Amino acid sequence: MLVVDDTADNLTLLSDLLKDAYRVKVANSGEKALRILSSGSPPDLVLLDIMMPGMDGYTVLRRLKELPGTTDVPVIFLTALSEEDDERIGLELGAVDYITKPVSPSIMLARVRTHLQVKAARDFLKDKNEFLEDEVARRMRELAAVQDVTIMAMASLAETRDNETGNHIRRTQHYVKVLAQHLSEHPRFSAALTPEDIPLLFKSAPLHDIGKVGIADRILLKPGKLTPEEFEDMKRHPALGRDAIIAAEKQLDTPVSFLRHAREIAYCHHEKWDGSGYPQGLSGDGIPVSARLMALADVFDALISRRVYKPPFDMEKSVEIIRQGRGSHFDPDVVDAFLANLQTFRDIADRYADSEETLEETRARTEKDYPPAGAQG
Image (cartoon, rainbow, N blue to C red; front, side):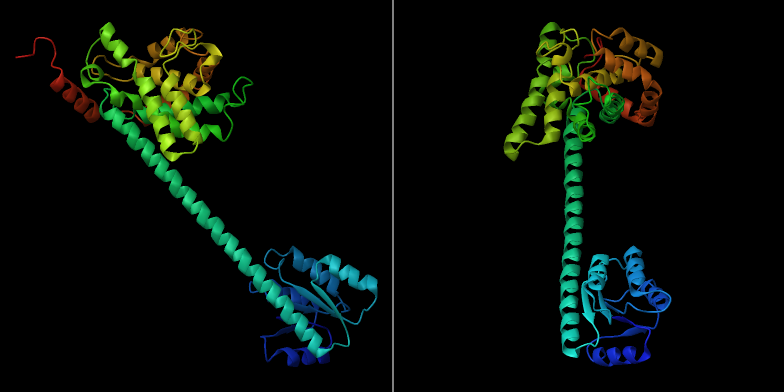
């Protein structure tokens, strides 16, 4: 502890009283006390005189409370000032106790011991709280990582059975995030695209085609136009995806916020603004916002990407198709957000472009299962 008094006899007396139980430092002025306090190793308690030449005890306490490393150090005033107002001022400044001189050794030691015990308890609780906060943060990071890995694994499983392979899920989730951030302050979208919702949308987007795991390979991997019957079968995948996510929620036995977005996206991202989409034929604002964003992201990526049944469209043609779908296929404001962020979409497409090896592997796998016309034995 630190004892501060401008009188040598008082410093000697207090040091002798305390030295058997505590390690004691002394300072004979307020200025020297502050140098010790700011040295990086603050004491556990300060015994502080008030009436000192130069810097008085009140000023020392004010400065101590301003130093980042000493705001919690308890201060006991030891002073000859015995007026009620003097004590009131000292306590209002933040002193934990006020002892008037002449000092009763037993009372002073009892009060010192009491305040050290209080400080020890407070420090323990502070350390415990910090540990608990760090532990909660660590476990939350682990939980988020498990969620992310699980989602990507589920989404990748769907991708392995689909000709839309490679980085499609990564590109589309970044497209959705860009659209959501742009529209978050738009009056039509602000309630659905809060700062809490946008990360959940980003996390949910890869599950948009999870239902394709339930579609037969003869339809899913067909390198050509589907027959009407095959297309009707393909149209089951939004409901299959929604049902799989609902089943996961039931297993958890509690609502999960990011799965709500995943459920909406999986079930509704093939709906169209004019009501001509599937599976429900929803239109306009009846389509969940998350699904409206995914609808544009998914179509745009399909247009610019190579498929086994088509080459990629160039960027200009792809953008024009999206533009033509404004108000029919897509929410007009979502298209406007896309056009306003076109360069960002280009950058995402470049950053997560599929490698030629990935495209060749997909083409070879599909042609093995479905040889081109005339190639069958």
